[in-house]
Amino acid sequence: MILSFLFLLISSIQQHGSEAESSLSTKFQHTSMKEQNGVQNSQHEKVITVTGEGVVHSPEFPHTYPRNKVLVWRLVAADENMQIQLTFDERFGLEDPEDGICKYDFVEIEEPSEGNILGRWCGSQSAPGKQVSKGNQIRIRFKSDEYFPSEPGFCIQYSLLPRFR
Image: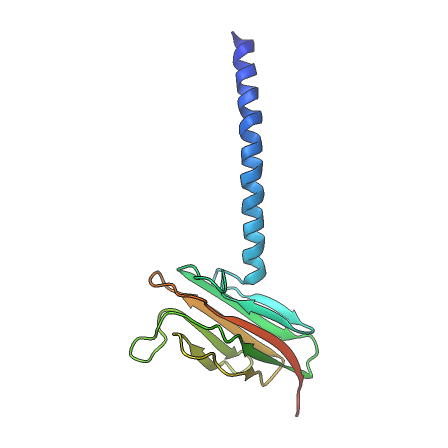
């Protein structure tokens, strides 16, 4: 009796173990993708050392982005004598503003050295123009609330420019 119970238990563990392993690897892959694209906690930021060109984008770009997200990226040029230039993809669309103010879903660019907000954009207006940091750093913040996610979100290409003093 005990032997047949142990056999059933071991068979069950082996069968469910492979399902759990598959589920676990999927979770790890999803976590890795999220970490590559930003940090969920608004008190933390994903620091990216910039040595050339790259891209940051809203989750699922160019499809509907998820609700209740706060992602922050701080781009830092490896060379202090360089500035960072941001170029928005023409496919831009976030939740519309209310009374002309981007309150709910938006992407915001900040100059960290001075704490100045260079701009905050939302809606389905044309893509924002190029943004250039004054120093060798720039911060990008994306926020979505719990209502009305939109598409396509945003995609920003970053590159380096020589800094003129």
